[in-house]
Image (cartoon, rainbow, N blue to C red; front, side, top):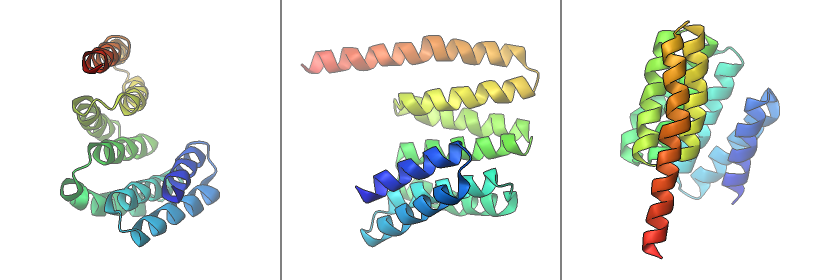
Length: 168
C-alpha cells in the first residue's frame, strides 16, 4: 500500500511542478517496492524518477534512466508499465521539442494501452499526442487524435461494459 500511495503522490506532484516532494515520494515507492521484491512497482517508480529528471531539464539523466528501464520492460511484461514508460518518455521528448520522436513513442504507448484496454492511460496518451501534433502544426493529426478520443475510447468503454454485463 505504501508503494502505491507514494507512487500516486510522486506522479501527481511531478505533473504539478512540485519536483522535490515528487522525487522523495518516487524514491520511497522504489525503495519500498524493492524491499517487498516487486520488480514491477520498482520499475514504475523508476519511470517517475526519470520523468522528474526530464521535467527538471536534466534530459541526459532522464533518457539514461528510461533506457535502463526499457531493458527490463519485456522481462517484467506488464502492459501498464510499458505504456507509462512510453508515455512519460514521449512527454520528455515534447519538453525537448523533439516532436518527431515524441509522436513515435506516444503512438507506441497508445497501442500498448489500447491492446491492454488501459483506458485511463489511453486518454493521457491521446492528450499528449494532441500537444505533439499541435507543435508539429499537423492539424490532421490533431483532428484524428480527437476522433480517437471521442470514438475509439468510448467504443472500448462500451466493449468493457458489454463484457462485464456478459459475465454477470
